[in-house]
Length: 465
RNA sequence: GGUCCCAUCGUCUAGCCCGGUCAAGGACGUAGCCCUCUCAAGGCUAAAACACGGGUUCGAAUCCCGUUGGGACCGCCA
Image: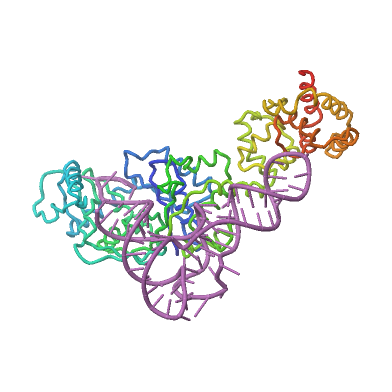
């Protein structure tokens, strides 16, 4: 039975990189019909917050990454770690270190200055007597030999044991450290595959020695490459939105984000667009690449537009509603005819890449009047076009059934009678009705805006001239 | 600085493990054309990559070594 976990530390919102790690674990679990465990690594109490825990959970839910067990919290499990740490101490596999953090920091600085590796010098390792001073517990790493990590993505990676330091497993305040908790938890939770970011590859040999010292079975490891910003440095706030929830707020669809993240570092031939079921069916570690990937916001935008096109209009309306309300184009308790809304959205969905854009485009369908862009006004509303607008207003007002078909007839009549190009008539009308030179087809727009608002807007512009 | 990882179009990648079918395929983006009432969407076309240097081999994007470049880690952070 495959058991994997996602173990974020709540020191920030769930970001793109973390989300992809979570996704790969989730896909692996679902593909193998295994279990996906959520564990909150909050042993750093000074930086962990409840808000971040909630925010991470909210982001996971939004992405649709459901977990089978947890969320477990390491702060609830302190006794367990402590017991294991003391077990190692008693067995002579760990030792008390009386060096203070200040002393260690000083020595690190000194070592750096001398160009030596900034590593703990193991000075307490052979201390025989027990002192009456605060101490941390350090793990005794083997001094020679080598450790091989058989990574499912990277292959065989070999480390010299002499390069691995005697890490602290229990701090002097009695709290355990990351590398220790991970081992204990992964064992206690029966984790079979540890799928995590490549930044943990160097931690792996340390953890392997702890597993061995504790007589625990070592899980399989898979270290997936990092996600980098456009400047090739690790993705961070400087590169714009990195929090998953920020993408939700910008109007991205969770399926699009999931699809995008899945294709970052993983591939299935030439296929680009996957349903969730396809992702689950096809996902495997063999096709996870080894190289870091740069976050390509343009491609995410494209995928999102593809997903918007795939989403039915009625569903899209539900999704866009919060954005409409936020922008003030719709009141919370306004009732909107769903058929009308579907028509409106159908006209716009393939020219919008996010829900936010869609909401914005719906502005001229929902409001009474629209503000006209100055440039558009200057170009299309002038002494030449006003008579034309008057004429068309008159003819439109006589249409009884205000449908695309009948509207088109009015436009074509005018064009034919006056020998004009359609654009010469359509553009000024478009500007008056939508406030901009860009919109869906003019007949479609007028039908959706409706006869009443169409005439109101036209007359207001004519009267103002 | 030490250790570890990585290297195909600007970007995500297929191909690499099992050398020849690769004068390197797809996608995003970019450019042009078609469609057209504007903008999209759609269709067609184009420019665009095997980091470099050595081997091995009849033959290398594919195997080996080195160089360069990038990344990660070296905490009583996770």
